Amino acid sequence: MSGDQHKDLGKALRALRVASDKTAETTARRASMSPAKLSKIETGKTLPSVQDVDLILTALGISGEAKSEFLEAARGAATEETAWRELRRMGHWKHQNAIKAIESQTNLLRLFQGQLIPGLLQSAEYVSAVFALPPELPEEAKARTIAARLDRQAVLYDRRREFHFVICEHVLRWRVCAPSVMATQLDRLVSLSRLPNVTIGVLPLSGRMPDFPMTCFSMYDERLVIVETFHSEITTRDPRDISLYLSTFSRFDSVALHGADMRALVESIRDEFLREQESA
Image 1 (cartoon, one colour):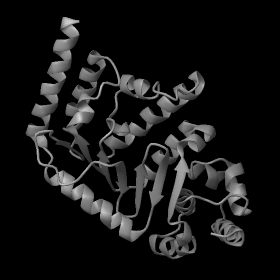
Image 2 (cartoon, rainbow, N blue to C red; image 1 turned 90 degrees about the vertical axis):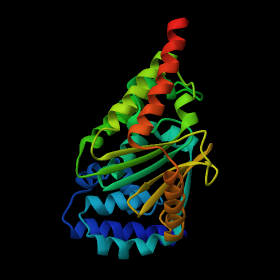
Image 3 (spheres, rainbow, N blue to C red; image 1 turned 45 degrees about the vertical axis):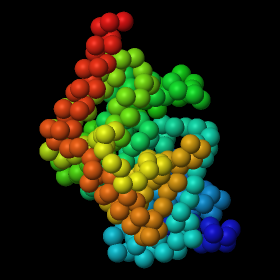
Image 4 (cartoon, helix red, strand yellow; image 1 turned 135 degrees about the vertical axis):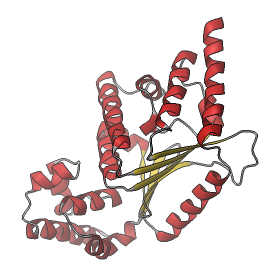
């Protein structure tokens, strides 16, 4: 998208805000961004991400049909990439708040994870261990990021929303913290799997896999996919990409263990950690 297009998009967003009779401060707060960032977007100094545009339009109360038509102006940026170093510079807790805002607007979240326990399911101790991994955050930034991630988890208890997680078995065995903490984390998985709006599937190591777990990704309804790589986070709204990830999720989910079988596997791994802790 060219510089002129940046400005046109920003002007259009500002025009929508003025027509909606909302102040910049109110819109920025509802869109989980600073007024300064919104100002830079509206003046064309900053290219808004796909997430930014979606959050601003939602904050303005733009209808689904009008939102879809307006987003056509940003199709050139339908797929974007943000380096983790940039997110680190901006503040990881701000990114957590942005994801929280997206989750609050999602009816069905699908998440495939082959690296770590999904953030929405993490215990406080596990979250702390994750953000202690290199490159470790400064103490204040780490504390704010941990608090923001834990705050996101309240959405699990909103019965209007559904959550479907598929997790590789090796993730449950990945030692990012002490055996006792891992055991507690697995207990939390079992407990959360009993929520009526939460489905957790585990891909057993003994099963025949339909594909390779190349990356982890999350799908927000069928409008947005966020993919995580080692160096960046990739966001796409391209319908072709969304269809691909939906198909990939469905194939993995078809061979995952659910319900009682899933809980039995998770509890057996938990018991291994407990025995290890007792013998230490």
